[in-house]
Image 1 (cartoon, one colour):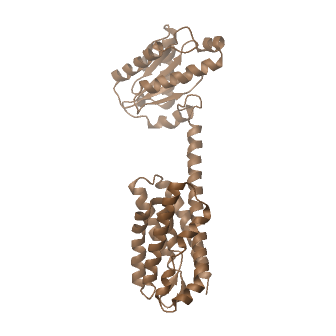
Image 2: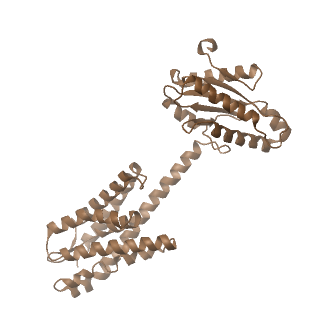
Amino acid sequence: MEFYPLIFNFCLLVTLTYAACLLYNAFPNLEQRRARLAHIGGAALASVLLMLSPIQLAPGIIADLRTVPLAATALILGPRAALLAALPVLTYRLILGGNGVIVAVLSIASVIVMAALLRHARRRRGQLPWWSVAIIFSVHNLGLLLVPHGPELLLRSYLPINLTNALSLVVVLHMLYTFQRMRELTQMYREQAATDALTGLGNRRQLQHDQPHFKAHDHLLALDIDHFKRINDTFGHGVGDEVLSTLAHLMRASLHPADRAYRVGGEEFLVLLRNTNAAQAEKVAERLRRAVEAHTFINIPFPVTVSLGLLQDVHRFEASRQLELVDQALYAAKRSGRNRLVIAEPPALS
């Protein structure tokens, strides 16, 4: 039996799997319909391409790795998705014709059924050993018994074909899992790089990333804790950290879901109030100020207050000018006695 086509099949499968990993970047959420259809279509295409370089077991009977993408689809998305992916594969095999058509149908059906059973077992019992995927291909070429000289063909091909399919599926699943894990870690590190560790709010890096996307009816609010140095010096930095964390919680409770808060300095915060009018933005800022003033902070015997500066319709200004104007409004609130809101007036403040 000539195995060079099978080696080429394996190399092609690895290449196609890598391409699928790149496609995963465009459709990362497999719960979405478009992502599932992309996966199904990719599996079908890969299976058909793998059929272009088969092993000729006998006239009209070929062997290749076409069932590996279908098995992976059944394990990841379920048997119905695998059946959809199998339709173009079966259609192409019917076009090729020959004695092996019935063998191909039974092979694909058995692989999908066995993969579905393994998927069900994995859901019930948790992670299964990697070698359990060999079960998927344990009966997939028994259809050879239905063709002339079938027992002889089965005896010659059972072990090498099934072993190659099983090992190929292990490689494919490992590649997909590794790529997904790398993507998750990359996303996690990206979020960590743009998130303040203490408060969970966005940091200055995230603010700089978001600034070019500020739109009409967006407003920028600057907020600073009054006498925060006194809190740290009197009660310790641990209490100061609790104040910062509590303030972040109060901000989340006072803001709309679309709004975005950032910690940009020790006790200084910025809030992007999105898609609202100026009057409503002022109400949100006042509501936040009152919420902080009314909150009882543990271990602090006096009220904790904040000063705020509000720049309305922030999109009118360049990024550096936005921060300059809102900071001027904040400092004006500090100079005016603290625990108050000052609206930025660009002509007067420039």
